[in-house]
Length: 214
Ligand SMILES: Cc1cc2nc3c(=O)[nH]c(=O)nc-3n(C[C@H](O)[C@H](O)[C@H](O)COP(=O)(O)O)c2cc1C
Image (cartoon, helix red, strand yellow):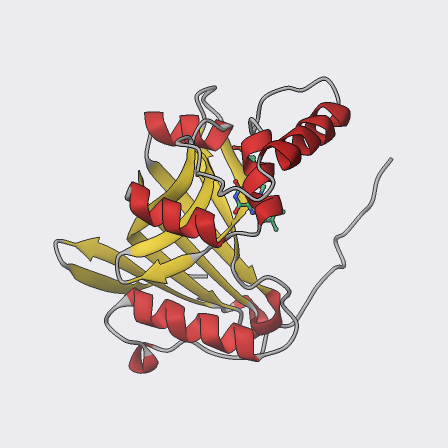
């Protein structure tokens, strides 16, 4: 079986990223790009990002998670702390997150350190979730091997009865991570493969700004 994709080719010409038009802080540029992507039709989940961790088996692993908040401190997502990614982060908090926004021909790659956020912040977010998502998080021992889907459905039904009309507490093994960036690279597709790449690297409290060859 083969599928030759050699002639899949796209001309990138929607925008540019020039030194004269960027702020000194990469979070501000991230916010500007995020807003622009949101405002232009075509991306379903602007906040979907690929999170890569260094696995305990020695392999990097990437998976999509949802960005739930960003501030000057970094990027917050929520997950099961006992999942494969949770166990990887406990061993090595250095992670990479990346966004691909094809509608504006943009990519952002962020290297940073992941740390659990304060418990009260995770509590607040957990309480804001729909009941179905709260119970789903409790039912799923994320990343563990299970015998069948039925096991999940039955456990969900049981918990729906148990918690009917009651407040559901966040399990202590579920919560948020903040990824504090040390490097943020912005990629803007340009014609003739001469794309713009601007990298911000944290040096002390300042960000060094460099242009990279495409
Ligand atoms: C669009 C999308 C959004 C997702 N959002 C999350 C999320 O916010 N948190 C999460 O734990 N998993 C999320 N997942 C599932 C993860 O990709 C992954 O399957 C899960 O976290 C288990 O990963 P692990 O076994 O590597 O820990 C999402 C998947 C997709 C495709």
